[in-house]
Length: 119
Picture 1 (cartoon, rainbow, N blue to C red):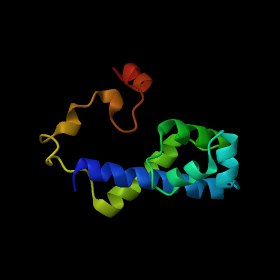
Picture 2 (picture 1 turned 30 degrees about the vertical axis):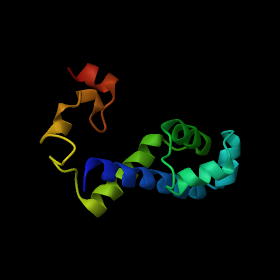
Picture 3 (picture 1 turned 135 degrees about the vertical axis):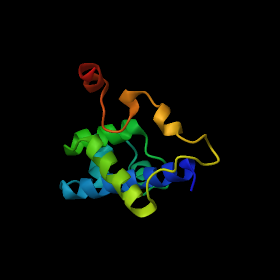
């Protein structure tokens, strides 16, 4: 599986995890869509993974329901790794070790402020 395929599956998992959290927090998808001034139909397409969920919508929805966006992303990525394994070090889209070339702040779980203070 290449990185693009993994990313598409991850995007679906983010939408589905957000959908579950909306319900768990006592909201409906329609209520969250309306609170975010979004079309309920478009919002449901994002939640069900038919269309990639924009980060702005993820952030808005999470703030409405009182959940950290990072939590949603972490759970969705954990599911991806659990079901498909970790990212490959090489595929047809890039050279081996490409993930290691990311700036430290871009690596999973690190904020730029944490990197600045750690050095």
